Each structure stands twice: as C-alpha cells, then as structure tokens.
Image (cartoon, rainbow, N blue to C red; front, side):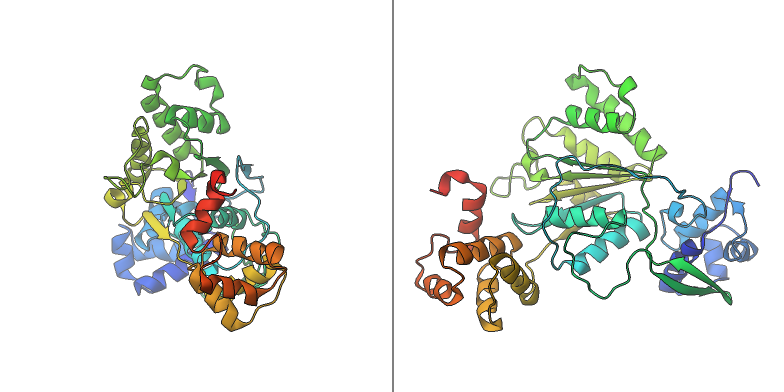
Length: 386
C-alpha cells in the first residue's frame, strides 16, 4: 500500500500507555470516532498492519501522541544522528534533577512539544540539565552519572500486546535526525543565528553570505521548511542575554533590535512542523504566555533537595558533612547547585575542609559571600572577585 504506515513494537507500547490515560480500550468506538476512522482500522493498527498514513496519524493524535514518527515502524533507520554541540559545556557530573529530566523527555518524546522553556535563576543548572537531556535523547550516558537503578539503553523488557510478547529495547531510539546547540550569551542578531542554523541543515547554497535586516522573514521561513522536512532539536542557551531583565518594565520583553526573536518563537510554537526548540533562560519570553498550550510548555527549576545538595558538597569539596550541617548550607543557598559548588570549593581551599568553621563564619556574617545573590554575583562578575 503506497503512502501507508504500520506501528513498531515500541510504538505500540507508547500508544498503549497513552490510550490508558484516556480510559479507552484498544478497540474503543470513542477512539475510532475521535480519529475519524473505524474500529476495524484500529484492529489493523494493533495487529501492526499497514494502514493509510492519514489514518495512522489521526489514531496517534487522538490519544495525544503528536510525534507519530516515534510510533511508526522503520521510521528510525540505522543512521547516525547529526549533532552539532556548538558552545555546549561538558558537565563534570550530573547530580539530581531526575524528575525534571523525565518530564522534559516525556514532553519531547511522548507529547511532541514544539517549544520548551527551561527557566530558573543563575546557577540553577539549566544548561547542565539541557546538556543531559540531549545526551539522553541520543542514548548517551552522562559522565559520572550515578546509577539510579533504572534500566539503560540496551536493556530489554517484555511487552505484551494482544497476547503476543515482544522483546524490545527499553530506551527508544532518538526521535531526532538533527540536533544543534547554540548559545545566545553574546546576543547574536536573529539573522546571523538563522543563517547559522540553515547552514547546519544543509542550506548554505540558498543562504547569501551578506545578510541584511530585511532577510529575517525569508530566513525564518526557510528554517520552518527545514523543521518540517527534518525531525530537529534546536537548543538555544542563555536566552536572557536578549531580554531586558526582570528589573525593568515589561518582563519577558526584548532588548532593542532583538524583537524579531519573538517572531521566531511565535512561528515555531504556532506552525505545523515535526521539530522542537528548547530554550534556557533566567526569565520567560513573553511569547510563552501567549502560546502556552499542549505543545508549548515551560519548566522552572527550583533548588535541589538536601540529599542532592549534600552530594554536591561532598563531591566538589572532597569532605564529609553531617546531615545537620548540610541542611544549614543547602537551606542558606536555597539549593542552588552553582552556589553549593562555589561554597564547597571555598570550604576546601580556604578553610581546609573545616565545615564547622564555615558555619561559624556564616552565622557571624563574616564571609565574603554571605548569601546566594552575593555569591553568584561574584561568580558572574569578575570585577567583584578582588
């Protein structure tokens, strides 16, 4: 059958989980009606028989699975994923954030989100979490990642559908063919960013070297074409560099000359395509308030819990600390991972690992960095370190 699709074993597992959330059985008339098809077609779907592409997609979308590519058999062939890490850092270790990582993975793999914002104050670990997310999506284990007891890629499990058992890979293949990471720390003009992205997707022949202000709409349309043709993940880190900041009127507004970034977010959030843009920022661009919906979401990171904070203190500081001592330090710095790393390094290097002396100085207010904002300000602003 031309232009037809059939479900993979892994795909049926995802669909089975999704239809349970809907409260439907595998041959539900309500499901068939929502998908504008027949119960007979549903039966073919579950038997992994080929059905028309349009019917296949509607069956998936009816249970909230917009990324039908993850459901279709033979969609992911044995081919390398094209990854450009750009300016992405290589984290020394990844600690905690497993629930947040699971949420982001579900939003992207299962729910087919088109636009995701990862938010939080400086030092909260947004970039580290985004790096780990990409690593997980391409099946790469993080350096030094602790074993949480969960199954890894390569493990197998048995899944039963209609009395038939299949052995499958526990970790699904990456849903993307192209992954690119770009930092906005130096606030590139949108035209320069779009040109860079298009060249990554192989559009260099169609992009002139001289870019003018009038080119942004054309370049953005070309990018949307690539996002429809390919299954792409684009990560834009440090988006706060193009925003005016929380201390100014119009939270989520752009610096002068960067307003067209809003059009980039709007079109990616509104238009039909099969890709995803993940953005990290200290504040949320205003478009997310307007576009927020099933496939446009934001996740704000909070401080780490005491147990995870203690792991950071002991690993970075190379000293042991009691639960009570750890609780005081973690609470004081609100569980901010970077603040805890800097504090641990200070205890190690300046106080020779004496946690009790650190707590005494903290109580007396005699530390050079008394609170979390002062500590982070000294880290991000070199002029204050002397």
